[in-house]
Length: 620
Image 1 (tube, rainbow, N blue to C red):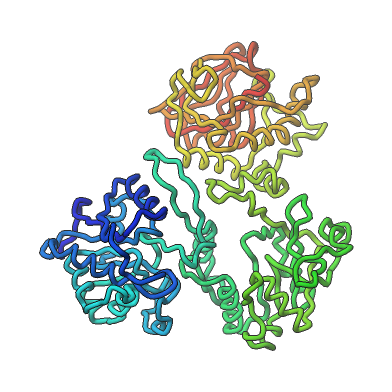
Image 2 (spheres, rainbow, N blue to C red; image 1 turned 90 degrees about the vertical axis):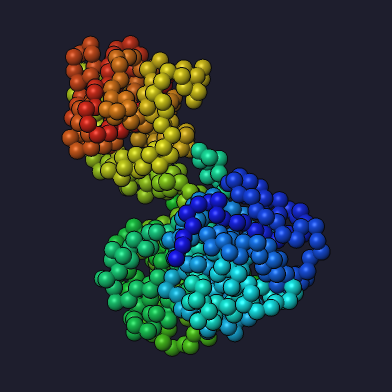
């Protein structure tokens, strides 16, 4: 059967009667991507029924499109893309949409949503789906003209009838569905419906070369969960993954997890939310040993009084601070504490779940968050809840500052979760090199060498820069600098370009300053200031070396980010006056040397592969 390959074969239609704000936004997004929709019904009185967002209606849209397609009836190569106008925006061009449509092998494709509208009683008749949203949404669809016309002409429809019900009946007719190869975009690969899944999406502006519009990104942890279950899923008795695309409400998903536990005759139920960073690998065992019906580990935001438990509740069932809350949260008092609320991470003895029907014990509430609702029902059932701070279990991620739009969001947590940041990104031998008895390595005169960054640190910096991808030209003209000129240019990306300059200065203060004091006795112990801070990339086909020069710094730091002999060959730094070279650099190790007058140096040729280093000119 013929498949269109050209964007010119795509006909885009919408229906709008007046220029409301949503319609203007729709046209702006289309114009940005070079899409020119044909607007049907503009200037006419609306005939599709009143308040179709809450009541049935929309049949007029079917009749308008049916009439508009009559001239194309015999053009089997034409594809129709229909969208609503007042609550839709385009986020990709027609070429991308067309390619994704062809991969579905559908002749007619509709958007999908998590709700069966307008007749919920039809829900059982829908085919089951393993992943994604199950029910048809009529706000966006596309298909080849012959099959679309068969659908539109399947039966007569009144202008005020419901278009979604009309298309639903066509889809639920299995013979007709197969005849026109009608499918739903269950995983929202082309049509992303927002209603009912707002909490599972993030909207942010993406700067790109084409200046494209804002794009929607799925929930950050979906990929992590998928990778974990693929790698470790076979080690568990049962794995059931519920993704944001399923459209399942949070309380319902949590109830389903309890049901899954009971179906497998579990002994304990252990719940961990994405904001709970468990760093103690004995947590599960330690909680079980408490021998309590409901118990959780105490987790706080590092350095703050924000925690996953309440010490008391107010008369209306919300948070109230108890007299000993701060002592417990700050570990002044250690022990096992009876509390009225725990969230984010907890363990339940399955005897409790077997004792009560799900109608009695569940996460559902019209007025409370799911975890608050569950704890409220436990209190009503006189079930005691306990939180333990007998040992350190971990902490809570600050979701207000944990920016999942960043390539390496954990790297940006140096302010909010410094303890975990240090454990993750600072070299395991860093502290031992600060001891008074430790003698710094000097591969060249007054060139000091220390371990500072871990393997995760080096890989994260490379990933941040390569994902950003806007490497400088390596020419003298550089509009990122004051004056717009660089005497000794490199192919690089500045830390501020990836919004990391303030984090890097904090890194200099916390981890480079102690090395400064150990290396240069008598030099000021003020907080280092560096300008610029940047990652350099050396390649044989780009910039393979750096000519002899002095740095405009009091001292310079240079941290190797990848492995010589593995990731690249050649490279290194030669200090010309001393005829001394450092070529056996180690990932995560920092070279510290004076700048300006004494240490005239050059970057040696990289003969193969790609070499990355991070450089700061301290106290210029």
